[in-house]
Length: 336
Image 1 (cartoon, helix red, strand yellow):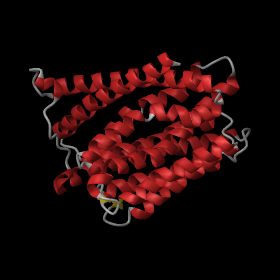
Image 2 (cartoon, helix red, strand yellow):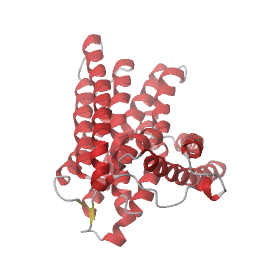
Image 3 (cartoon, one colour):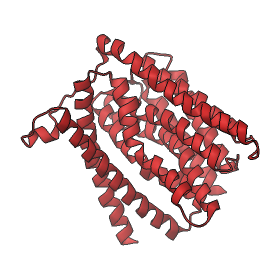
Image 4 (cartoon, helix red, strand yellow):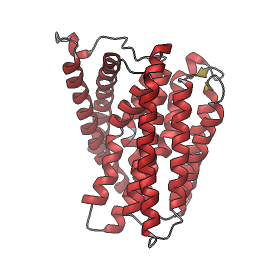
């Protein structure tokens, strides 16, 4: 038990260091390519840091244990647990990180159009994925059509986000790197090659740290006797979502609200489209109580963000309520 806890601590510090390396390089990449903070956060950062939680369900479904049922439970739980974690606990942690400085009534103000676009795409896609749970498994063509629609939705989202970038840069929303790149502090020049090298190093360390953290969490969960589905819905996302949480907290504490939220909401769009498409086509994808309750909690949390997105910013206290929603879901699941 002690060795597992020590492993968790070491891997957590590795992820923290890797996140600093990654965000630093990503800011320089966005500045070098002259793209908006929305593209940097919602596409580059989101996809890069979504690799750990993307890998877990894919490995479970394609190279898991000999028990197909267990593999499917891990896959479905990891697919749906990631957006739940991001929309509730992650947004709450971001708010807590700036609550003392901005106050509960203070505002968190990501760039409005990109933020709303991310939320709208996610709500559409995730609601469609929820509807797919009620489609019988033998209705393969209908399931395939829903899966294809989700994949197409993400590609449309990418195109629209990229198209909006140039106008946002002209309006002062271009990505700016405030600190020197870490490799340049070691004497290397700051150019596209060294930026990509540091970025690759950051992603590699994030993946290695997340994999080690997942192994430690899995060991602790098994010692505590937690079920496979509950493990995949609640425990695994805590580990796999660490890169997004850490990156977003680092950015929001530096008053880079657009990057912070883009990292979260962009990852949610990625996870709410491509991964459910895989789940719909490769698993029974049925509305079990644990799963469907988590989906409803996620949609409520994102809907709450969308309501407040109509103003000039989101009050810090409103984000804290998303954390309360996660605690309530956790309490319900542990009571079962």
